[in-house]
Length: 303
Figure 1 (spheres, one colour):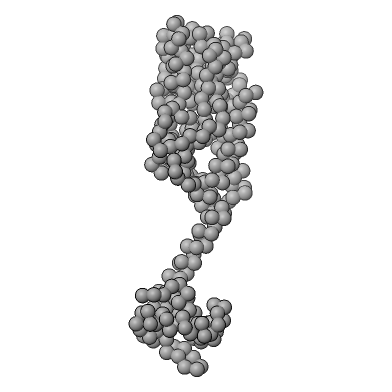
Figure 2 (cartoon, helix red, strand yellow; figure 1 turned 180 degrees about the horizontal axis):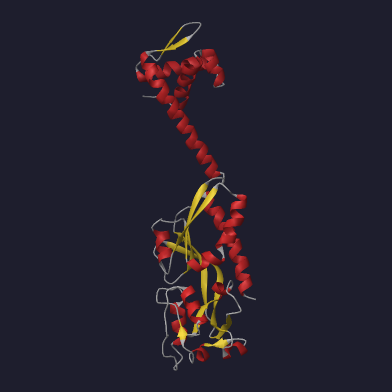
């Protein structure tokens, strides 16, 4: 069968208009061209679809069976192309991202709010992830991209650094550490230490730094979540080593912190993308918003 959409559009127009003249005008083609299209379609199908005379056009029994389904199919095709046009034009779509809870709580709400104010047709879907799970979700295609810290190199996943997140000592108000402008790992080793568990993105960096401190005897606790570590500090159970980014929203009446300078510890926070995969226009647009937000946020952490 050799016919295309213009032949089907001609038939549906003829069925609706009941006249070749009006049908040709509705498609903005000449009547001779329109007549040829109908004839080509009938020849391709091997069946007569329309009975016509000089005054009117009527559907044959076969034409009656085809008219309704073809009109619905053409409407569906038009809807598909309109949807593609909206997605390509960055006015519609869904963006799925994975990130760790602290990043979502601190940085993403404002970024999403600003993004939605300009792109209300694009929805953002979020998934929590810890450790290497973020990169894994990117690799398997569960999300468009991920935001977090790289622990190890994940196969087929690229990492782009967005900002550096320095480590801080977090302690209750009234601690002797409050008198210092910064602290060293050797000084911290004299306190009960609260470290995040082995799956966290900062565990390896902290342990490498503490390995050289001979008076270090291990952590008193290893909670899985930052909020748990902060709760333990507030209860005066020890000093936590945490990234500066998670401390921005904390109540300074209950907690205090100092940068760790000897050695200086920091983690790289960035975006995970699947290698060789093109992001949708909507995802690329939202990633641009995230980059700008992270640039501003990273600058704040340096002061």
